Image 1 (tube, rainbow, N blue to C red):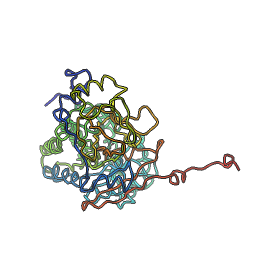
Image 2 (image 1 turned 120 degrees about the horizontal axis):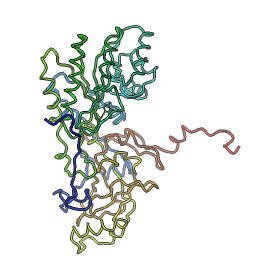
Image 3 (image 1 turned 135 degrees about the horizontal axis):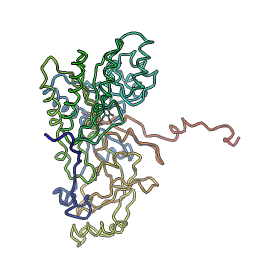
Amino acid sequence: MRDMNETYKGPEISDELGNLPIESAAERNPISRGMYKNVLDTIDGVAVEDLAREYDTPVFVFSERTVRDRARRMREAFRTRYADTSFAWSFKTNRLDAICSILKEEGWLAEVVSSFEYSKARHLGYRGDEIVFNGPYKRRNSIEKAMGEGALIQIDNWDELATIENAVEEMGGTYDVGIRIWFNSAHAPLWSKFGFNLANGEAYNAARRIIDNPALRLHTLHCHIGTYLLDPEAYRLTTQAMLGLRAELKEDTGHLVPCLNLGGGFPSYSLLHGMAGPAEQAVPPIESYAEAITSELKALPKAERPVLRLESGRFLVDNAGYLITSVVAIKGASYKHPPGSPLSNLAQKEQSLGAHPAKLGYVLDAGVNLLFTAAWFAIDASPSRAVPGKLYPTRLLGDLCMEIDVIRETINLPHLRVGDSLTLHPVGAYNFDQSMQFIHLRPAVVLIDENSDVHLIREREDMEYMESRERLPKHLTGK
Ligand SMILES: Cc1ncc(COP(=O)(O)O)c(C=O)c1O
């Protein structure tokens, strides 16, 4: 086991083989050395071209089958090792009604972080006691409503604790609550914005204050150590640390906290920039996270084992989401090289990389306003038809009038034509929810169900939708 104090190091690509880490990684990756680019002509049995024609591009497409498969795999990974596992779905990862409803059907609770998300969960039919309420700021009226309806508030800070103490005094009754805790797991980048610190005793003191209040019952010790965490060891250390606090509280007060919530953070099959794939091999399987966590829990005597709760987002939905785009313009001198150019593939790459401004570029009809995660992740792009010939290092440019609007600085693609479809994947987590109407409005979203029937789940935004929220003061109407 590694030392707790060892500094976490993310996946590292050395630049020994080339001058730029990304390119050297690509050269080393046997798949990228090949001449073959995956074609994505169908999604769950539906032709990409039909989707593009029917809904216009760009269009977000979600696979119901993938969401359910991921949920089932996660449930199986944990429940076969530790039956008392409870799952909550992180609404902020993807708040589309259809996606939340699939996870509700799969038995997931709702994990929300605002009064808007809380109302949304209630609107979708979640009972109050099926909702876990997180976040650094909850309004007093939402706290009272949620507690009154039986939701579990996971307290973030001292001021919130004081608000809750005050509220329960006025409301009367006894209420379950949780507290969020942060600490240095040494195997994940440090997240210290949320919750009470474990190392300096803050978490213990907050827990004691709750246990000592007869109107409150400390139901959950909660932490969420980060997102897209590639090292299962981080979860083992987290489990140990949380169990340590739980044992200390039991020893001092006799109260055994019934639930341990370890948050989310399990990675999807996406790759960070500079990371060599394929993602299915670079990312540890969910079973290894399940093993790290549950082996620690199973070391406890049976009667002392807590309910394990998890709040996943990315793992469940990222792979289920696609964005179909169209190539609307082609840039760069390299475009003049006809397919089958006499240059070797490597020479072609070098030439293009050396002459950066002239690198071949495809302008797509979607920009980073729809792809918030493009800053961290090397989102893959696949044409919908097989294109013969070499692969060329290419830039994928968005349709925003902004220099920063680059979706991929380098991706190997065959020569495409204006009008070709290019599908970006995986984009199911955090992209739709963080998308904004910047320069362009947001596109339609469709869901392909398990019978390959296609459903429009969110209409393309239009001028009327946007204007409906605007108010023009009378003196500016020109009347
Ligand atoms: C408290 C909490 N729980 C769960 C999640 C879901 O995380 P992920 O998508 O990495 O699984 C988040 C996301 O940041 C979070 O803040």
